[in-house]
Image 1 (tube, rainbow, N blue to C red):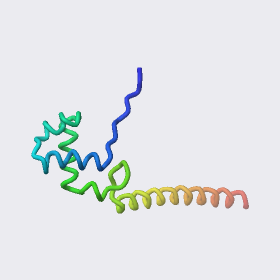
Image 2 (image 1 turned 60 degrees about the vertical axis):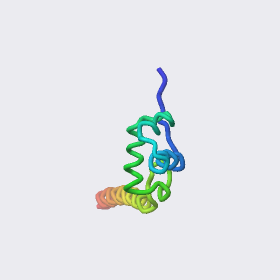
Image 3 (image 1 turned 90 degrees about the vertical axis):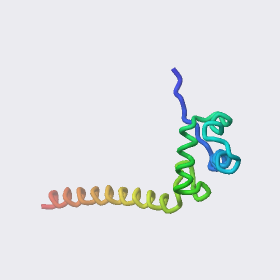
Image 4 (image 1 turned 180 degrees about the vertical axis):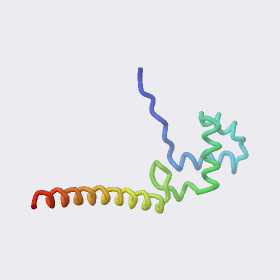
Length: 99
């Protein structure tokens, strides 16, 4: 049994698909069939593009620079909390053994 991988599409490809619907007058079903996509995927891209244009996106996850920075800062906070817990445990250990 082989493992299926998800297809990933570039923002440029998504913009071209959206342009078929918005600028060239194709229906969502027609454009999806032409591009060999599921119509629900194209519908989701249209909705996402209305909320946040793809040309502002960065990376595969489709995050804005602010979202990426927030994710990175939250990761750093988690790392610092783990380091802080380790230091607290070490301090407790040495305090017990110094008596």
